[in-house]
Image 1 (cartoon, rainbow, N blue to C red):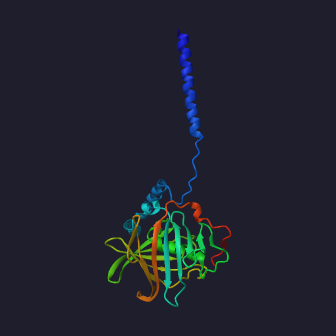
Image 2 (image 1 turned 90 degrees about the vertical axis):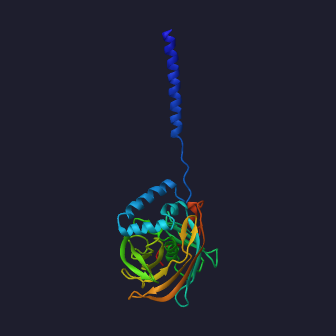
Image 3 (image 1 turned 45 degrees about the vertical axis):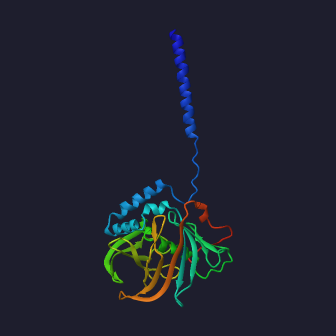
Length: 300
């Protein structure tokens, strides 16, 4: 009888072992599907937001910028919303520059863009994370598309673009502009960050609300300027508010030359930001350059 019990026990134990082994084998053969969306996974966002908050909390300047991001909807929501689409219509005053008007889709998680010109939607250009391109090769676009591929990206993405680790922030003296006194933070960049690491931005932050009200900035793009040189400072306003999926954008900008004595100079540009929509279903491949594109190897 004991032998029968022992035999039954061994059969059951072996059966359980085989079933467990099969389950383990099934687990090992599960292959995760590749993630193809440009919109990051929520767990990726949580990690990056936590790192940004810890880094920015270490200085008063960083705390001011974090507060500005919170006012404008929060860094976590900004990234979780996915790529954002908008029309950025840059309208220089007569004799001060070239009209640049595009519909842009911007991936702020991976720093990629794709533009369609409003005047000719068949002409596109962008930045795929490594290279600048335009399409078709025969397109006659009257400005440097490598420079402009990411320029509206920064203006439309403020203050969120200052969460990146390559940005250095310093609090400066308060400044009065149009009857309001603003807290001021200067943002500079580490060596090798972008095409023009000598660019800088000076943020005007409203004390009562932490709203970004204006910026001053320079352009030091190496195709235009020698090392250490840059444009005269400009002042750009951030006027009006439009809230899209929890994120607050400005409605328009006015740009003025900023004089050496700290006064507002010539009125040079109007910019409108419109048609804003987040595009969470955009595939990563959307930011790949089209076949037969012209690839810009240099800065010009």
